[in-house]
Every structure is written in C-alpha cells, then in structure tokens.
Image (cartoon, rainbow, N blue to C red; front, side, top):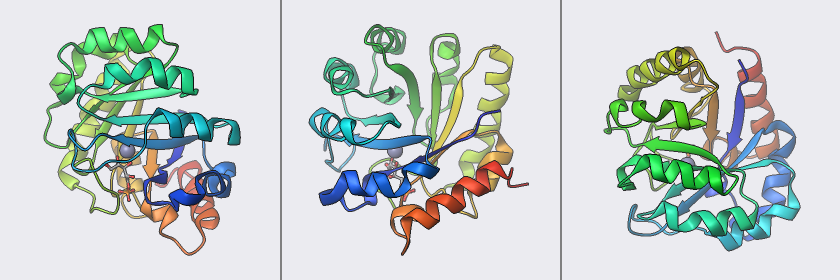
Length: 221
Ligand code: DX5
Ligand code: ZN
C-alpha cells in the first residue's frame, strides 16, 4: 500500500509560502492546501490565485481541501491554477455524483470529505467514482485542534469498504495528526496523512517532516 505524507500549510508562515513548502518538500508526497470561505467554516484562508502562485514553486501534487459552501464553483479556477486533486465536503453538496464528475472533467482527482459527525454512509455510494475519501478527525476550520478518537471506527469501516470496492481509493485523515495519533490512523487503515501544526509548529519543520516520513515508511506498528 502506498502511504503518503501531506503537510498542511495552514499553520505555516503564509507570508513565505513557497519557502515553507520547500522546507518540507523532500519528505512530502502531497502539499495539502486548505481553502475556506468564511461560510462553510468560520475561517477564511486561500483560494485559486494562491494555488496558482504556488504552482511554479513545487512539483508536488497539490491536494486542495475545499471547506466552502459551493465547491463545484471553484473547480474551473482550480484546474486552471494547477491543482492536482480536490476534496469536497459531502455536507456542502446537493449532488455528490455530479460534483465528482465535474472534478474529473476538469482533470482533477476527486475526493469527498466528511466531518467527524457525518456518517460514512454519505460517501459509500460514490466509491466507484472517487479517488479519495477524507475523514476529518477535527471539526474543519482551524489547525492545532486535538484529534477526535471517536472517528477511528469510521476510518476502519472506510478502509474495509474501500478494500471491497476493488479499485484504488485513497483514505486520508486530517486534523490533530501527530506522532502519537498517526500510528493509530495507520492501523485503522488510513494511507494519506495530513499533518499541519505538528510539522509547521515545530522548531525545525524540515526535520519534523522527515520524522513523519520515517514514521509512515516504517509502518508505525
Ligand atoms: C483544518 C484543516 C487541516 C489543518 C490540520 O480544518 O483541514 O488541514 O491544517 O492542522 P493540524 O494538523 O494542526 O490539526
Ligand atoms: Zn485540511
């Protein structure tokens, strides 16, 4: 199984975004970008122009987590900006099948994200038409929150459902992932690990990212 590290720059020094990405790039598979609109979540971050600005500075996969009321509306601009994949919150979508198809039409890998309290049943009908399931392990909106243990059974269930689907679907965890919680997610079957403040809040983000890389590659029990 391919395991991926996706550092989240939400809590990085955003005035120096390209330099911050460069610090973790060698250890990272994906760079996780949190797009928030101030409505779906009570925080307002970055949009397609920042994705476009970052694009020439890294060859890494740009993994865009859309915490917005109307994720479909952003797809053309994100494709144009050079995004690689998008995760759209199922809570924000009237018609997830249509949104996934629209992302694919724009050449974007397509994922569905669920908040901690949203049942897995909301995404299972779409396993044959998505590339990624994002299980939030905190309420979306802010970095630096504590990992919600209660999501672990949902991760295990998602991993089993994906195995039964017979096609490659990544299972991403996001929120409160650190050296203590990552191994628990890994054992539950997650394979893409978003790590924000445990990397960019460290004294040496490059060394922290490298340590997470080793934790993931070592299997972490
Ligand atoms: C929160 C974001 C996360 C955030 C994670 O809504 O989706 O990607 O950056 O940060 P940590 O790892 O600090 O919880
Ligand atoms: Zn995120």
